[in-house]
Length: 148
Image (tube, rainbow, N blue to C red; front, side):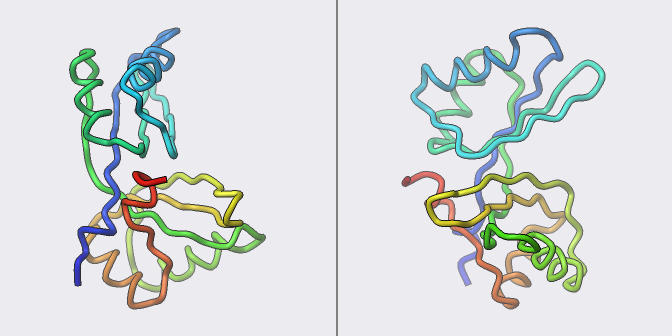
């Protein structure tokens, strides 16, 4: 089974919790012609972690490094569920029954397909992909984010 196609490249940027830093990050991406498909911004006292999935992950990564941001690449899994009451709950029940540990998640709604897309970071991504596929979860491939 080709697990790699289900690994979605995520870019994480550590940004100072100062006015304008979030804007500067998006400006770099705009100038590089990168489109953000999904994102999460979490803050701590002095720094924030901006996580996002984009249409051109390599371009985004290199552009942010060149602009002197602290940047990291890793993988997440994207699942699609019906955009209706209980959609997320049913997926989380499956994940819970499979004894998978979620490190964090974020989401966006794909209104055109009437689906919600959940992005998950799991402790063991290969195990999570295998178990979710065996339980008929709708996993999205990276091309979902890069080719549309």
